[in-house]
Length: 221
Length: 221
DNA sequence: ATTGTTAATTAGGTTGGGCTAATTTAGTAT
DNA sequence: ATACTAAATTAGCCCAACCTAATTAACAAT
Picture 1 (cartoon, chains in turn purple, brown, green, red):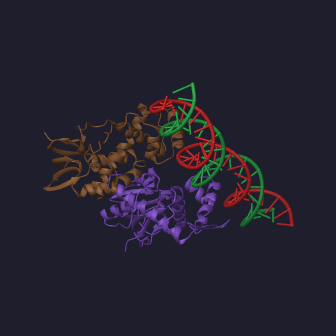
Picture 2 (cartoon, helix red, strand yellow; picture 1 turned 60 degrees about the horizontal axis):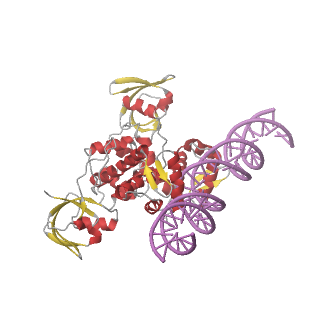
Picture 3 (cartoon, protein in one colour; picture 1 turned 90 degrees about the horizontal axis):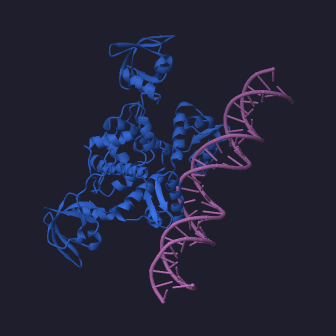
């Protein structure tokens, strides 16, 4: 039960399986291939290796699952990534749309020491700039409020943005311009066929459905 | 003449050639093999590739030299490394002996943005915690005072430590305990067969020659 | 000139992570 | 049941960066 030291690819596979599991109830080879930007045979091959290492379970033609230890590793990588994103934003003046790419490379090479240092410095935050939960040092996911995509709200109520479900730089840029960022509140006005009409900071916008579904909110009580 | 994007190995080769050239007047395949911890045939192979890319020149059985562009890349990596070392020490509370290893991994993955951000934050420093010069953003080495190894001083004069020529963690630990770090002054007492007797902060030590030759100093005028 | 030593190179193999093209499997629709 | 489609797998190849074992080159000493 010692630490086998994984390659960056392997870490990426585990991380991606974890993230896909949060959304889909099953993770296919294709999903992985798409997300990791490789061809399906490469996925088959790598999954085989990860199986042999007892990091994933794989019923052919059914889907992939992380084992306990596989999940631990995924959470470690995720913790690195999200701590880094917050750190880059807070301490190195990165803008919202720049943090992901840099964190993507750094997450694999920082040491436990580095992780602990920035976590400490930032007071052990629970969420990154996108609103994504940061696993704790013990690799538990923190409790997250119950969120729904903005485009699913029907009634006129106020909501608070909890999480932005994209890493697309242009969309992130747009949203930050509009102050549609985690923590901010939206006075919900109207949901019609064109999109969601919202009010933020006294400014009123139309948010198209394609974008609204990336903005997950909780109702304000 | 576009940017070919080098692998980490390739960057390491270029960096190591540069560092060896600062010390030896010629760089052999063996030197490289030793420093990079690979076997000589691997070096031959890699040097061939770097030659083909016009990053090094190689006269078989004579030695390796960096081309202009090869040197630029080496200096970029060196700049990353040394900025990172200082950054880790200053902002993330790393101790002297921990910074090298971490910087060694990070140097290959940080972006220009990251480099600029930490350089800015630290006020564009010229030397890292070991006293090694940090190449400027334009990739020029800053002027460095004229230094000599501590064990070469014969007369009783005061000196200031300029640079520590090792990355050995135990030695670095020892030296930092004794306050034998760049910037500090040594009241030079006596150079005898056992080593150099020095006074630092009212404490008097014997520094063995093996260690004294790693401590490069300038005379105080 | 011959020999011995050390440095460097060549030949050939391994491993990791990709790839394409061809094949098999599962699931759907007729 | 049959045929079709889409997903997954297999077979076989490539490339980077390493390795060991065997060979060649340079050079000093006799």
